[in-house]
Image (cartoon, rainbow, N blue to C red; front, side, top):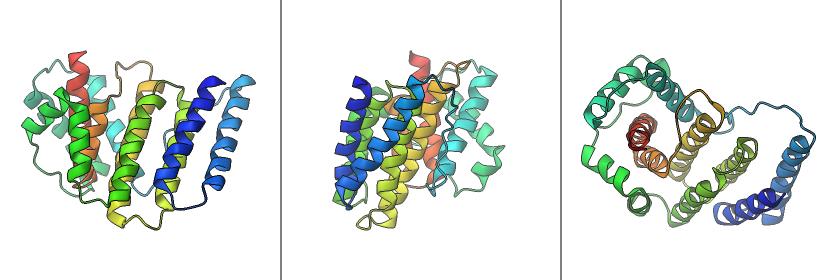
Length: 242
């Protein structure tokens, strides 16, 4: 119960910064969603939560992220260097039809990726500040990335509707530009799928990380394929260090 109340406070606070609609309506929406999840959990109902959000026009980015990540982890590659991992991720990506249908991936900056691995929070702040998003969108995305750190300690059946509520507020925000929404929703899609993989795919050794999400954001500023590529690569490198 305590965790649900904390989650509610976080979501309402986040929606305040990411919506231009009536906050009372958003609060009611979140309360109903979390109340339903609490009821199901208390009643010991078995319910499988999937990571999808069909209302997010950039949902495919998260799906591709998990497909490529799963292929890499399933093969149990022994690689440890950034170049080895990058080449392998590129090879896997080239066989993924959804990935190849996206815009071309921008060339990697290995120095920037290493900096993200070493100082993810700093690189997060820099990526948001230097992006072309409006100030309101920057605040919204920064709040979301901070909230994720708190959310990911909970159960996915609660995390998922929380992210969905956030994405709905972004989609419905008439003050955000299309570019604002593209960057935010691409980043949130990959975050949503990555956390699902960490929480629900029990036979794989994977933990989502701030660096994994920062890689998604850095790439999302360009396009979806770059977001997927940088997120997977950064996440695997960080995972290997643990």
